[in-house]
Image (cartoon, rainbow, N blue to C red; front, side, top):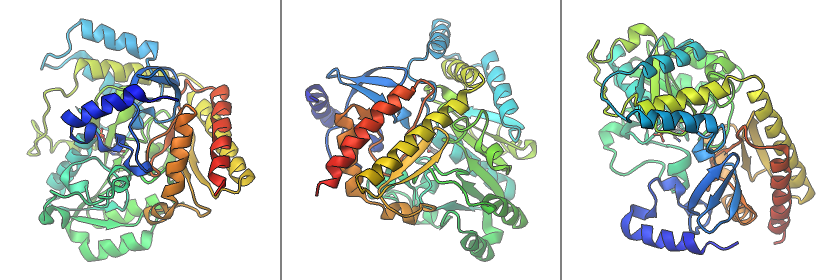
Length: 431
Ligand code: PMP
């Protein structure tokens, strides 16, 4: 496989774009280096790079692409909306339609607001929680990424951890002191934190199913206890469902785990691939937001017609019966195959999977929190990533990210992928 044009483009990019990439997780720093592959075109489960190489895509653009690339229903919706004018700066009927769809799918969203990214959505939920409670501190779980607003860039998981800076420079000490970080799945540590800071905590920020140190599910009872203890201390529970909403079921992870937060942040899948974020929750809390309340949040592009149209079209596709069952079946086949190949080649491998999202860790241990994910073998992952890439399988270039299946993937794609895993593990077992 040749990467000549990608290499040339990357050399050019390095002259103009900081680090050559517009999001650091696109660099190959976490996989032992290399030139990021420049994609040109996508269709269904595949994309093609500028050198004409074809890949089965498991990156899914880090989550938004669940229907496959260039799904005709989404493409038609975006085209129609672009033809009608891309931005008005006034309300449109599309915003109502989409808000109603989200509310129907996620009952805890009594009121919503659209923004342009997951970062904005989470950042605003924190502001709203502070406005509502009159308190300043937040609790987050170590290794969970919640976007790049200052307050959440403390022990911040996948992207930052891959690059070796889980705590970003440029975040003031004052801001860092407003965040208390505890290990995920450790209810005793959480209770301890609340004992010390409970009366100062505005909210706890939770990925109800973690996506940012790999796919990690909560232990039974963990989220119920988090809700109970948080509310006892007078703080709010915020679910960051930027990855999880519409990824595992039509609706949100809160429905899967059976626990309802006070506020929810959304992004990724709900935009069908266009820029989007949204947040929402209980009416009396959301009424803190301007123009009704004192917490300010605004956006020139917020609720823009193209993103609304794309999001509506995406959810229409996901409403069809059998979608999540198919993702689960494909995910199961992939998981089973990878584990069997690990045994065959005596490669220690743990797969964490929920439906069509999974993470392959090079370890023989169970992964329930960030510290355990950190301990997994980065060198093996780097080798695996490059071996898979050269066989036309595109994974996220980080051991902390998930593989995302789309409804366009087929059994045949999984077979091809497992052949590539077989070859990769064989190479990796030669020491
Ligand atoms: N929250 C979570 C759970 C995420 O995974 C991400 C992005 N990976 C974000 C927030 C930030 O979203 P965005 O990149 O759209 O700002």
